[in-house]
Length: 452
Ligand SMILES: [Zn+2]
Ligand SMILES: [Zn+2]
Image (cartoon, rainbow, N blue to C red):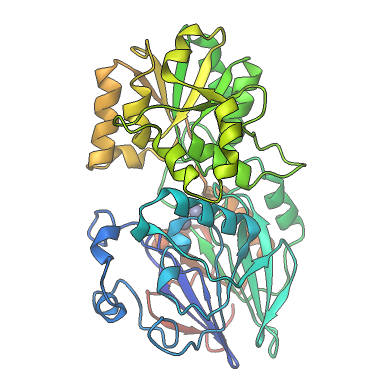
C-alpha cells in the first residue's frame, strides 16, 4: 500500500492524496490551492483555457496517470471529503468516467454554487456521483472505505478510513475537522470508539502555528452575538460571513431568536439553506417566522441573486422568497432589530439601507482574509470607514486546535502521523510521535515505512 500527497504536505488548501494498493488507485480530495506558492493568492482566472499539459508543466496539476480528461481513465475513484473548493476545486480536470464519491450535503452545496458563479467557475459533477454516508463502508476494488461524518465549517464533511483488504493495512485521512461546532458530539463519539489498527494517520494541521482566538467554540460566538444585539441601540447590525457556513448561520439565527430580532439573509443563502433542508434539522428556512430575505436593486438591474435563481432549477422558490422579502427602505419601519448577514458582493445593496451610519459590522470569517492586500479586503474596509461602522471580529475556526488534534491522534493511536493541510508540518513533531513528514509528490510505501 502506497500513498502520495500531491499537494498539501506543507500548505493549507489544494489537498490531493493518491492511495495505491493491489490493483486499485484512488484519490482523496482534488482541491484547488488557496495560495500561489509565493505568499499571494491562487489566481483562478489565470488557469482558465490552459491545457492539462500546460498546467502540469506549471506544477499546478500533478502528473497522475489516467486521471485527466485527455487519457483513458485508470483511477478507480475520487473521494471528496467536503464542499470547500480547496478540496474539490480541480475535479473538473478529472476524466468524467472516474466515479466520484461524496456526501449528499456536499453534492447539494457544490451544485447550488453553480447557479451563482460565473460560467468558467462552474463544476458539472458527473451524473454518477456516489453518495457516501456516515459509517457506511463500501468497496472500491481492493480497498474498503468507511466515511466518518465530522464537525467542520463545511456541511456534511467526511473523514475517510481506507483499508487494503489483502493486508489489513489502513490509512485514515481526516480531511478538515474541528470539535467546536454544533456537531461537536461527532468528535466525542469518534474518540470514544475510533477505528482500530490504523497504520498511517494523514491529519490536517491548519491551526498549527495559529492562535485559537477569542471565541473557542460556536457557542462562544453565539454568546457574543447575543450580547452585541442586546447592547446595540441600532436597528440594524451586520454580520459578514460565508453563505455556506451552515453552523454559523444557525448561530446567527439562534442569536436573533434569543434577542427577538429578525435574521435577514440574501436569496443565495436562502437557496443554500433550502437545498439542505430536512425535517429534523435546525437549519433556518426562509418561511420561518423571524427570517426575512433581503432583496435590493444592484447597479440598477434589480436583484442579481433573484435573476440567477429565475434562470435556474430553483425558480420554484421565488414565490416563497417574495413572501419573506425585505427591501432596503423597509428597514425604517421595522419594530424589531435586524441582524443582516452579508458578503462583500452585497455592499452596494446594503448601502441603501437607511441609517446604517455607526452601526455594528461583525466580521465572522478568518481574520486573515481582511489582512490581505487585495481589492475585496480594501473595498470592505473602505465601506466600514465610510459609514463609521464599529468593526468587531467574532469567529471560531473550522479547524481543530492542537489540543483536539492531540486527543484525536491519541484515540486512533496510529503507527505514524503524516501532516497535511498545514503551513507548519515541522511543528507536528513537538506534539506527536512518530511523525512522518512527506514532500508533495513523494511516494510513501506503508510496508517499508517501519513501525515504532
Ligand atoms: Zn481545507
Ligand atoms: Zn474545509
